[in-house]
Image (cartoon, one colour):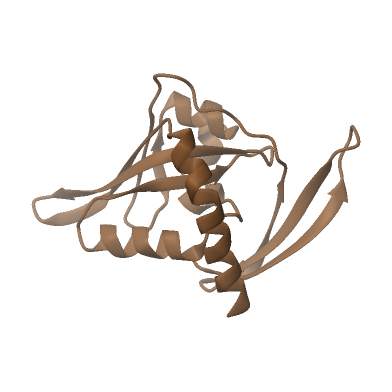
Length: 171
């Protein structure tokens, strides 16, 4: 899915803080997705790994306990959902375009990703995505995410913001 529109609106949130409402539309989905984001970061657990698998269309078929816990979604909500439900609006489209182009060639992809939690918060990961190929046939993808390097996140945040601004200027 590639975002073609992201409209932001600040709305009040209990306790006096604000959340940002994002209304997103995607090329392959005629509907809109409304998500709410906050500035609450969920820290990646020390020594943990997030493991998930998807089918060849990016629909989640497996989610380990760490994935369920940090994302805030129940396992039942994750299984059968598109992996893009975790797409944070601060992530540029180009990052996911590169991911999909790479794994569709049958090659592994690695990178830093800011994911969206169910509660509107976020968590950063250092992700490795691998095609699952058996007897020459693509069955889906496996993703292993580990605790990211904070220095690398600080380095990438302005890069991702610039990429996102560039994408929006061409929308």
